[in-house]
Image 1 (cartoon, rainbow, N blue to C red):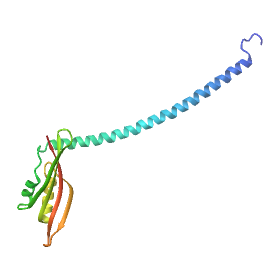
Image 2 (image 1 turned 90 degrees about the vertical axis):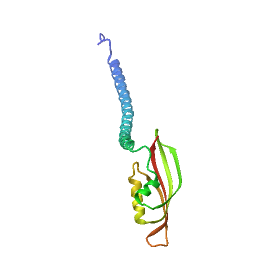
Image 3 (image 1 turned 180 degrees about the horizontal axis):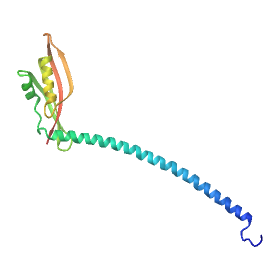
Image 4 (image 1 turned 90 degrees about the horizontal axis):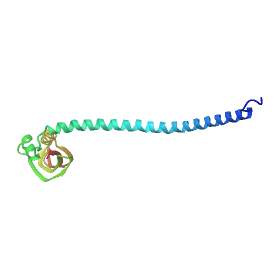
Length: 164
């Protein structure tokens, strides 16, 4: 066996080193696999969130398209009152505007309705919420009246949007 350039001891040493190198590479691969799995799970979670946001954006685009078909200026609450309940005693307490989305302005109105029946209030609220663009009811305060079937006062805070 003296003619063999690699001795048995050298072969066992090389085999042991190869085994050790294989174990180290396997451990490194397991660590990389763990990190890669975390990355892919995060990407899958991010994709789910992006799909949810996409659905919301699609819904909002549809609403925006619908609103662009409405008249640029909303019908004032006083005009809506005249249309829905002729002779209604409406007092506009305040109106304010503030910028909303680009090209749009939010309009808020605080109004008071004096000596109104529940049926008249229902007709007025239906007219307000079905107007184009519709008004949203942000707040409503009712005060009772001494007269049967009537409300002494109704305070409403309404909001809508208009195109600039």
